Length: 433
Image 1 (cartoon, rainbow, N blue to C red):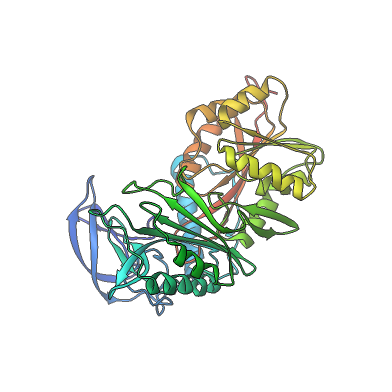
Image 2 (cartoon, rainbow, N blue to C red):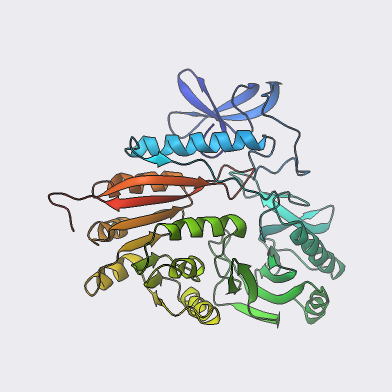
């Protein structure tokens, strides 16, 4: 199995990547040459099925967003463990690293947010999903991994859009709806409709307001053909609260539409508590890439002080409000580049532990240099990408010993793997003390 959940076979000593194929299966495949020294395979039919293959749990047969949707959960965990282990071994020394078992996901319908394109099916607006390697959105219904209440509220929104005959975005037209974003917890939902220009009418907005579960409505205008963000300056608040509430453990967080928040909060809380367990009472801690401060508050339970750094100024403003609302006084939040702020702060103070939760791209060279020079006794690395984690650990091992790592299954049915790794500074000649 490959890191993206595809099956891997070999033809003429070259790897063949086959989405939809599992280990121990015999498959009929069409080949095309890849960009490098490999082939891409299109699965035509299964000739011999794996014992790990089960009946598809999702009605959206054309959607390829969940490559493990037809695999038993036990097999998913087994493959994720193997993929995680092999990825680490490819780049760094794991001989003395304790690899803990994958933390299982107790939830099947775990996603608390829909972020999908809008498309047409038989003339009706519906949710879509981009197929891998394509800009074409296929129609989907009742996504299996979404919270079932999200699916229900989304259906009500679609009914309003269709009843009012709202237009969808087309390249040759300036006006139209593009994406539906819906996030919710405890029967309170925040709706953001992304359009090519602000095109929702007062009539449509009024009908959307009548959906009792929706307490917040925004419209965001985005013209980029392949947007990297749905939230630019041209966003307007149409109704209700500007932020919605979410409970994680004993803490309450307030989320604006653009705020990053974990899609599986049950598993996220476990990760945050594990990260905090590596701290000792009274430590001075840096929480890099802190976002709205969700993990920061868990770290503050043990630490003497936690400094959160994040380059998103709105997220820092939200983090300060979240700390204040939860009466957490031993935290400080600073807006700016994590590497630059670490170097600046190191001139004034020494951090006992540095906690990292970077994006999928991992740590850049500047941050790796700052960490190596920091003098911090411990690093706790929360990762959402085994490949970039392994490459970063390879460099950090020059000065830090990787003691243990724990993979987490936040996104069942997919090949995605999160993890928490614990590093301890080496002692000896040439090492910072």
